[in-house]
Amino acid sequence: QGQSDMLAQVPTCRADQVANVFDEQVMKISKVPVSQFLGEHVRLVLLSVTEGEDKPLKYPGLFNTADVAAITKCDLAEACEFNRDIALANIASVRPGMTVFETSAKQGTGIDQWLAYLASRRHAECHAG
Image 1 (cartoon, helix red, strand yellow):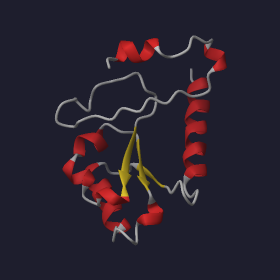
Image 2 (cartoon, one colour; image 1 turned 30 degrees about the horizontal axis):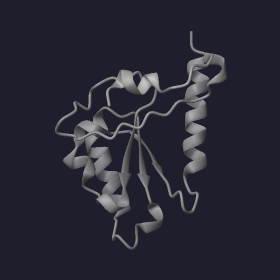
Image 3 (cartoon, rainbow, N blue to C red; image 1 turned 180 degrees about the horizontal axis):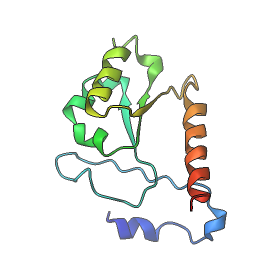
Image 4 (cartoon, rainbow, N blue to C red; image 1 turned 90 degrees about the vertical axis):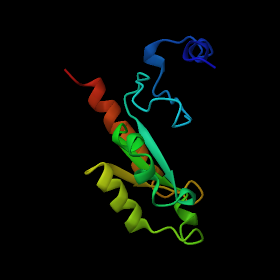
């Protein structure tokens, strides 16, 4: 489905009625350029603990074009033998200084921090110049 087809499905509303719009782009990394600008204000890259700590090293372009990262499913880290320190070091080696949220939807951890980050970014953009 093309981007214009997706946009046609978005209901018409006034800009002052919209707080946030999320656009999930699941891309086959070899076929879609990660640098493609979609008009987003914040680009988040997800690293599930089930994918392993080496995702930033396998796909550095994803991390280099993102504003922030989230390590997801942290409640499964022990079962997956996921090494948090290695994952954070790999992210830092590809994108030094990147903000990383550690989240678990099941446990609710990290979600408040992510939402606070979004709210602060929205506030900053609404009150910019």
